[in-house]
Length: 515
Image (tube, rainbow, N blue to C red; front, side):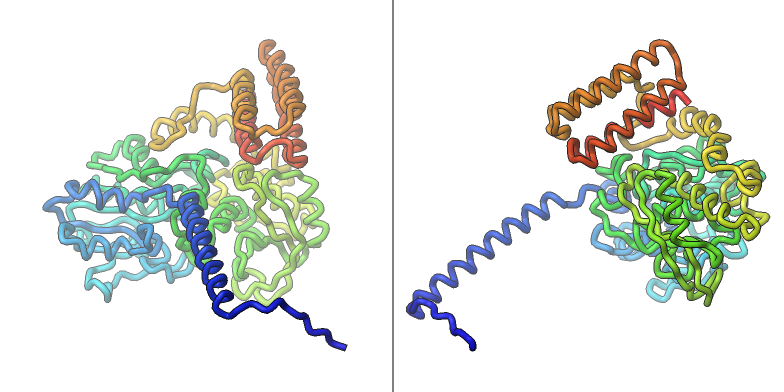
């Protein structure tokens, strides 16, 4: 039996009045909520191309302009830098230059790109990833100044930044000026990881030697290379407005344009920088799937065993799911591959080089007879010693230990001298500094529980005691305990994620000082 609900009788005219009032009120609330949300999530970063067009057109007054760019060269409204310059009445754009993947991004990795004429503008497009990597004299004959506007992802095996370096070398040789329209480092500007590339482990990179994760923008790299390579050029950088080193790409408010066919998202960029280290071997880095660099494995890998092993290795910022995949092309096409999918949980905490090496060593150890490195693996990681250790069965932490000293020297003596954006590296940190951060976070409400503050200060006082005794090993051990405490407090919602990130970052810096 069905029962029909009876509603009180309401005059039609009154009902309509009430309904209209509700709808108007809802619309107002939605509009206010929408405006508030938009204001909260409003664009924070103004990219170099917009800064240049607004403030620095005098840099190219009366000059013929060549533009090196690709599909990532856009403003906040996704207008192409090519169109913005070509259509601007005060810009004389005479030539275009394309990096790997071409100016439209339609070429696969490693494919040579041909020179041609751009249909939209009628301008010549000179390939810098073909017979030559550096603009020739002929390519530069109608150009006075070269502008570079390409989104990089922060990895030393991603080729765009080296195209910038080669452009600078050609500009020095042929008396041209260079302008960099700066963009964010897609994976942030704080972390620096991996060995500083050695000269015998170079492929496309020329003399521009960087660690695996360099933590710099294109403008910063150009500024560094001009000095470090003694390049006699007029270099200008249109700096971004609003970018800071601790920003990940999602924090910038900028639209993401896939930087190459296999880097469709910012997460892809982050993971690529680490999981690319499983490549150049008998392991798959997920190319040929819809999740490149998130999926890794090999046909002989037990996925469940690998996922369990990776979780036990306690790698911060990520988790692992057993996965099986069938690549549509590239390595193991048409075969079922066992492995894991890497899921990002806290991007700020990920040490991507450790992630890549832990994955490589865990898969190697499942069946060492089936694991083999290509002869050119050193060109991927940048170190012959790391290649040999990985091949010989060394653990990830032992491989990483081989470059720590040289990396820290490069960071302090070279990289940190050329950073354009805050926060700039500070003087050495102490336990007292971290205690001050705890106090600030307590006052701001990011540490929610009084007992949490008490426990933190107890740990930090113990660290301070061993700092005064200059007992580095014990300092590191106790800071590790402090980090375990932070993780416990975060899991139990005693501190905010912001508090965790701030204190973990500070404690990591302290560990690095004592290593």
